[in-house]
Amino acid sequence: MNRILPRMAPALAAAQLMRVRSAGVAFPVALGALIALAGAAASAVAGVPWTRVASVAFMPLYSLAVGMDAVALLSGDALVELHGSTPVGVRAVQTTRLVLLALAAAVGALVMFAPLHALGVVYGDIGWASALSPVGGVVALALAAYAAVAVLESPRAAAFCVVFAWMALSFFWDPNLAGDPVLQRAVPMAVALAAAAGAWLSLGSPERACAKAVGAR
Image 1 (cartoon, rainbow, N blue to C red):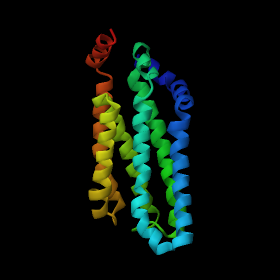
Image 2 (cartoon, rainbow, N blue to C red; image 1 turned 90 degrees about the vertical axis):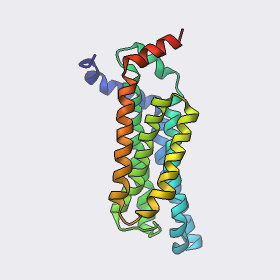
Image 3 (tube, helix red, strand yellow; image 1 turned 120 degrees about the vertical axis):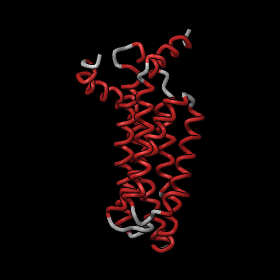
Image 4 (cartoon, rainbow, N blue to C red; image 1 turned 90 degrees about the horizontal axis):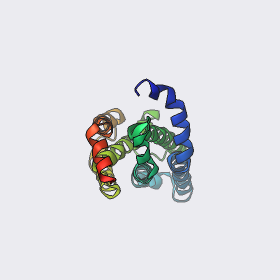
């Protein structure tokens, strides 16, 4: 099976892209563009200084929305479990969906950041390096959603974990490291990657497959 999966990867990616293109690809990019448009409108109406302060509130909402989207994408499709009886497996499907969503979310974060950066309304902006904050934040939350869905197997509990992670980042971690986007995102990304790696192992464990098979009877 390990030799089959690399050859099936392009077909798997194409199939999952067709399956999740609205929620997994279009939504993050469209949301990033919408937030950028709202920020531009606010700067024109209320002025740059006010919008710069307000960006502390509205820019983090992007990562929260995409995190909730990731939970729905990874737990709201009954067809995913059917792959457990195929050579592809649930783990490959979930991981493919995560990669597609993370890439789209990163693009959406850049779509959001670039116009706001050009207008000078990003709070604590130190140049293009500040793009690491929204890009890294949304990818970290997508990884957190992947781990939570895999381990908890409950959309409601996974959503709660994503909201908790978002609150920890937005209200406690980010404000204290606003001037250092590299450190600001390095630690959360390391934690999220470790959690996602554990979830990846869990999704492929024989015990999990047996539990699913027994529970389906």
